[in-house]
Structures are given as structure tokens and as C-alpha cells.
Length: 570
Ligand code: SF4
Image (cartoon, rainbow, N blue to C red):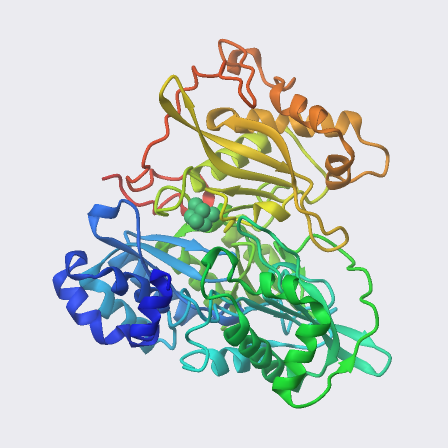
């Protein structure tokens, strides 16, 4: 039995709360390896550096639904316990860092008092349910799924029939056919469509990324809104009872679906339900790719709009969250949403006051009209806190945004991901440009670099990015991307998107573009010596960014959203 299965068999992850006082009083030295595994069921992870005794804490925010009061609670926790640092994740959660063991009970109490929770936001259980960030306000929505998201969440959370799954289990639910919730890469991806007899929901199963990415497959059934919770439960039961518990690298649902194929899996689900589900017609093509909801847009409620505020790589601060709560209270109702592209929306803004709202958003140092690159970039936790990381991500994303914004304009949505290791929490396999943290050894010195994956995407054209065969040193990342995008503009056909171009182009062409010096950089800014680099080519060994633990607290950010509140250096 592997160590995680053993720990779960000795005590359910949900029972670790009875150990929390011991851990809080004794600190990390009082914690056993099994405690460390089980704490994840309450969103609590040890963070890098390992010997400093700090924790990361992940809240669970079903569908990203928040209120100003909830946001103020999160802001206060960040300030009081987490060095004022906040990360919004790609599952609409909010994460804290730098939390001391002694503060964990008070942190959880404060969340619970505000109706918030961390329960099962990590661990081998049903993770946060992702919902469309514009549910209930989107003019094209076919079904408002907020109540369904809450129903599915309430069914699974704290449910001991599902608190020991073979591995993590991810569900996304949306009320339209535009796939903003990324059903393609969830264990269960449910989305509404308009069928011959009205609105129904499709179910996809077995998606996931990590080191062996798989797109989910259509289960071939059409279900009603009332079926979503029972069908999700039946799918999770099949996974619980038939999933691989021996090899954690093969234990996600995607491997079971792949091994057994859809007809077997559907039969197994129907056997659990005790009935046959209606068969769905072939899925229709997905209509668009831009899923970020940034900027100011009309709601379906007449006279109201929502504002999507961009946070580069999801990194912000408690102080910035307070400012968002202020804006929501001044102009909106009580509705705020986190998005699965790591941003935050304020809903219900009166269109008659948009002029002053835009002014106050800018005064609060947020960007509601982000540039093409600011709106498109995501980043995982990275080496600053993640023990599995090999590369820094958040500050790299910020540097890429700063430089690309200045040097190149692209008029189509191009998703960029900065991901700290092959585990793909930053979803780099499904981004147009996926940057995967890597390390190369040059003359015995470890250097941080990024593998480049190109042409990934979801929706109209599902594809995992293809490896360009180039490892770009971190300090040259932005320049390589400018050169790549310049090459795209030079070589594309009239109708080609960036993704199409990357999938068509020969690997050598893409590698050549990444290696060459971009043409729009002022000579004074160019490196003293032009560098060539690539597989097996170590001529860039003069690069100065050495791979380090990046364990210090982040420097003050130049990004608008957290400029006034960045945590101090240690
Ligand atoms: Fe950590 Fe790797 Fe996941 Fe990034 S992708 S958060 S570095 S495990």
C-alpha cells in the first residue's frame, strides 16, 4: 500500500481536525508524515522552505461566489495571518501563505464564522466545484447553475462516502455551451446545451492534465438539472470503487475511463443510478475560446454591468481584496466572483454610473481594460512556495506582462501559462503558449529555464501544446516570446489563429523563432552578447538567474492590483 493510502486507511482525512490543537501548539515538529497528508483535507499544506514551519491554506469557494463581507474576511485573514499575500487559483479558490501552525485554528474559526470553509479543498476527495463566473448574469446563459453548484458541493463536502477517493476529483458545471469552466480537463465536466426538447446538460468524464494530460470524453448522455448531483455521485462512486489505489501516478479517473472506454463506464454509472440515461446527440462545436470575462460587460439584467478585474497570475493581497469589497459595496449589490482564470469580478454595477466606476476602479489600482497579455496569462504557485516546483512563476508572469505589453500587440486571445513543473497546475498543456519550469545544469551550476509548449487549446480546437524542443533561460523568456509572436505575424496565413499557426509550423521553425533576437528591442536594451540556446546547447551559460529556493517573501509588485500592499522582504 502506498503511504497516502496507508494514511487514509488508518484515519479519514476529515478526522485530522482532532489533531489540529496538537499541531498548532507543537508546531511542525509535532506533526507526523500522516498528519501532513491528512491536513490537506482542510486545505492545509506545508510550504517551501520546508524548515521554516509555515503553511499554505486554500479556501473552498464553490462557483467562485463571494460577498463583500466574505472578501473582507479573506482580506483580514491574509493581513493577520498570511503576510497580506493572496493567490486566486484556477479552481476559483483563494490561497494564503506564510501561515503559522499556531494560527491555523483561529484562521479556520474566522472562515467558518463568515460561512467560508477550507474543507476538502485539497486531498483525495471532491475539490472545489468550478462554476461559470457569470452564472445568473450572462445574457447567453441557458440555465443558471448556481443552485446546482451549491447542491453538488453540499452533497460531497463532509460526506464520508466520498472523502477517501483514489485521488483528487474535479467537477466543473456551467449553464451554457461555451465551456468557460473548462469541462475538457475536469474529471466531470457538465455544460448545458439546447436540445430538440429544450435545455439539457452534457456530461464529459475523465479529463485532467498533470504529466499525462487527457481531454475528457463525452459520456453520450443528456441529463436534466435535477440529475446533475445524482449522476456526479454515481460517477464518483465508480471512481471510488474501481479506480487504481496502487499507483498514484495512474489513479486519476482519466486512466480508468481510458482503460475501460466510455460504453463500460456509462453502463457502470447507470448501474449505480439504477436507471438508463437519455442518449444525447453528437456534441455541437464550441463557439469561442476567450473565457476570461475581463473588462466591463452588460449583464442580462437591464441597466447593470459586471467588471472583471485582472490579477496577473492570480497574485494579489488582502489589502487589494478590501479595495474590491469597497468598490462592490459602493456600486454593486453583494455579489463578487472569483474566476478560474485567476481574476475577480464585481457584479451588478449600474450602467448609468460606469464613468465614475471606471474612475474608481483605476484609482483603486485595478485594471478593468487589460491589455491582450494581461488578460490572458495564468501562473501556478511556483517555487516561491510549492515544494514540487523547479521554477519561479508569479514574478515571471508579471515580467512577461510588463515587457510584452510594451513591445507587441496581438489582436486575438492568446493564453499564456507559466507553470513551475510538469505537474501542470498552471494548465500549460492547454494554453497557446505553455511555459513549464525546468532546470538545466551548466558547468555544474543549476540554471532555471522553461520548456515551451505551443498550440495548446480547448473549445473549437482541443489540442495539447507541442513541445518546441527549446529551453529558454528565465531572463530571456519575454524576448523569446516577442520574437515568436513577431514570427507569427510574419508567417501566418490570412485566416490563421496563433494556435493554428503553431500546430501547422514545423518544430524547427518555432524553435528558430524562440531562439532569435526580436527585432523591436532598442539596441540599448539588448544583451551584450547574443545567446543561442536549445537542447544540448549550453552557450547561454552566462545567464545570471541561478536556480534558487526563491523562499524569500515577494518583493513589492509593480502590478496595479497589489502595488500598495506587497508584503515585505524577509
Ligand atoms: Fe507546484 Fe508544479 Fe503544481 Fe506549479 S505545477 S503548483 S510548481 S506542483
